[in-house]
Structure formats: structure tokens, C-alpha cells
Image 1: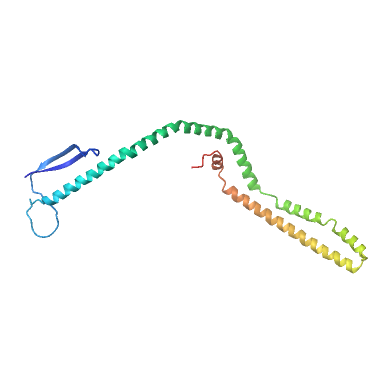
Image 2: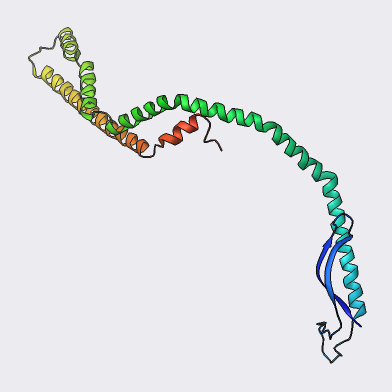
Length: 221
């Protein structure tokens, strides 16, 4: 008894009908791998096994038709509507992108100049000595009337300006003034150096092109 050996089969997923098939008839011996021990003739056929496989194949085709029908009923209309909505939005998105490009072209010179100024200011930094001098001047200004005020207060209390007591008060005030001046200069120096370091750090990580485009909405994903 010959058997049909199929090499190509095309099935309609909607109906399960066979649209195309290619193959040839085989009349030679057939070896079936069914497992188990014991000998068997080469041409023996397990009809029960073949029936089970045929039933399983029919069930699989039924499942495929069921899912294909569900896709046609629910997902296909959604995909069509989504595609149509995207087509309607395409002119608006194109116009928006053109406007963004126009804005970028117009703002690019100003953005470039601002970026150059930022990098220049960051690399040059602040003058540490100038900051220390300003701190010294500000602190000294707070002490400009201290000696006169102390002398008047001592006079009201009857303290002789030439006495050792008054000289001790003056020495204490001078020590406090020197300490405040030194502290102000140190604080100004440390602050200026830290500011220069922060500026250089920002300059090192600055992306001029990315910054300009991000400001125009091109780097927001």
C-alpha cells in the first residue's frame, strides 16, 4: 500500500482548507519510531496512533481558527484605527518638527554665544586674591569705629587712656580684629577656590550641542 509524502502544504488559517499541496506517493518500506522493545515488521502501521495525531492536528487547527477569528473581530479593527490615527497625526508632527528646526536655526547663534561665554567664565574662574581683599575690606570696615567707641566708653567710666587697663582692652580688641580678618580671608580663599573647582567641573561636563537642542525640546525622548 503506497503512502503520500507531502513536501509542502498551504492551509487557510481562517477556514482550515488546504489551498496548496505538493508531494509524491511512496510505495517503499517505512520505519516507524514508536518506542518500546520487541521486533516488528517494517511495514506495520499503528492506526490508533495515527488517529490520535489526526485528532490532535484537527484540534490545533480549530484553535488556530478560533484565535484568527478573535484577531479579526477585536485586534484587526484596533490596528487599522491606530494606523489611521497615526496617518492623521503625521502632517501635524511634520509641521511641528519643521517649526522646531526653524526655531533652532534662529536661536543657534545666541545659544552658541551663551555657551562660549559660559565656558570662558568657567575656565577663567574668579580672582582668589580679589575675593580675599574684599573680605579684608568688609571686615575692616566693621572695626573702623570700634577704637573710638571704646575710648569714649572708657572715658565715661573714668578709665585713663594711658593706663594699663585701657591698653589691655585695646590689645584684646586688636587680637579679635586680627582673628576676624584672618578668618574672613581664609573663608574667602576657600570659597573662591571651591567655586573655581565647581566651574571647571561643570565646564568639563558641558555638552554645548546637547544643551542647545535640549532647550528646544529635541532631547526629550
